[in-house]
Amino acid sequence: MRVFIVANLEKPLARPTLDTLLARLAGHAQVLGVGTHQDAPLDTVPADAIIVLGGDGTLLSVARRLGGRPIPILGVNLGRLGFLASFTPAEIEQYLDQFLAARLPVSRRLAIEASVVSADVVCHVGDPAELAAKRRFAATALNDAVITAGPNFHMIELELDVNGQSGVRYFGDGVIVSTPSGSTAYNVSAGGPIVSPDVLAMCITPICPHSLSFRPVIISSSSTVLLVAAKVNLGTTLFCDGQASTKLMAGDRVIVRRSDNDVLLIDNPIAHEWRSLAQKLHWAVSPA
Image (cartoon, rainbow, N blue to C red):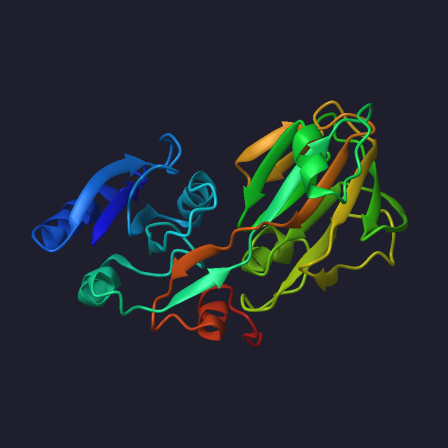
């Protein structure tokens, strides 16, 4: 097996975990190299799998840098929550033999693609080829695409259109379009629903809407979401997974759709979904 390792060396446990892992892999796998979470793209690395030492943020970076290549990612959590990076350092040692034998479960995670078309550009946003030719920004996200109000922190105005059905126009601090994998991230903090990773859906969650009736909604993953920046601040920005970003100008159109490429995650056999919610987010815990 050909393995590439990405390590966030800013994490205190990264170096000892990396040294232990390299010693265990010696003679059992071909380690193509060790990169950091800030390195160049991974779209040319000829790996059979990538091991990520860090946290969910490091794994999100790797997923984006793969450029859609179907290479399984195994995440070792050295951060706090670790929903995507589901193995602990002790567990990766325990399951390393199964990993090398390709016997660990692999799940396909829906990713989204966010594109920005400037106000002065004529474009049929429902045509993927035309959109790809005329957009000024594009990025994929495993967790979410987020429009934030930014400085000078006045409310912004957005128009929301799903599959050509327009009519929603609202003021607030922004909006989150998340995948099921990202539903436990910014989405849940903003009051959005938790969605099981195997559900083919997207969540649209407003950030502090100036309305009592604009609630989060779940839509089909086959939908196309169009967000028009009707009124913005100087610092209004689109973020994809909190990493790739671009500032938005008045009239810009943000188009979010399902990516053509899913992300492959190697799952921890003992990190069950609902147990993780209960343990890491204290989901459904009764008051003391």
